[in-house]
Image (cartoon, rainbow, N blue to C red; front, side):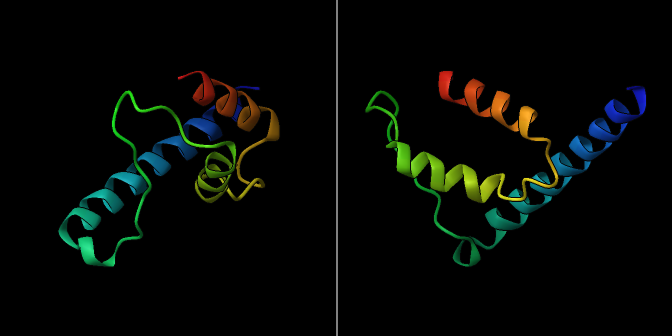
Length: 80
């Protein structure tokens, strides 16, 4: 079990580093980044379809994340 968690933490650390590098690159090259849907605070949430499309793109490689962890994350994100 300890190895699984250490693998997960290493994978998580690498994902955070990659996202950070991408955000920095994207801020320097806004014309080369895909549009990310947004809404003003307090105007309500996105439709279920838009949520599915967005999260499928973000977490689309289900092989990388065990399904139970993905389900818990999506439930947590929906509450947020």
